[in-house]
Image (cartoon, rainbow, N blue to C red; front, side, top):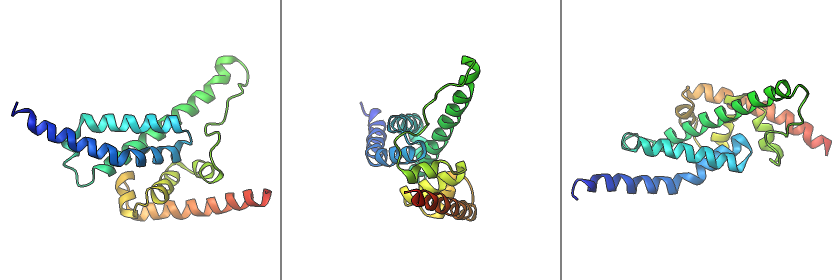
Length: 170
């Protein structure tokens, strides 16, 4: 019985981590994918990976940064796989398929964010949705804070143009 006590503490720590970080992980995945059920699946997958390696991850300075990196990477993989599937459908069917938009029902801002280059969209989501510093984003995306700053600058320029054009259409 005494041998299970350290493991029990680790499990309790993970449960607290899960309760605290789950809404943020889903929100980040939702911002990147635009689909709630997909965002929840990505977050759950990230937490399963975290739980498998929790004894190691719990020792990190910022386990939440590790989790966000997993969410960002999985969202990227899911979207990339979706694009490959969409491109393959016409070849499989022998004609152009009527495929729905990857992000139906998303508001205009996040739709515009998802149209940005991948790293710019990730930086925007982490900065505005997660309220992370440039250094924290750099840690999640595995790049320097200067690179993050450049991604955000370019993203803001593109978003300004896109959202201005959208506003004029109204």
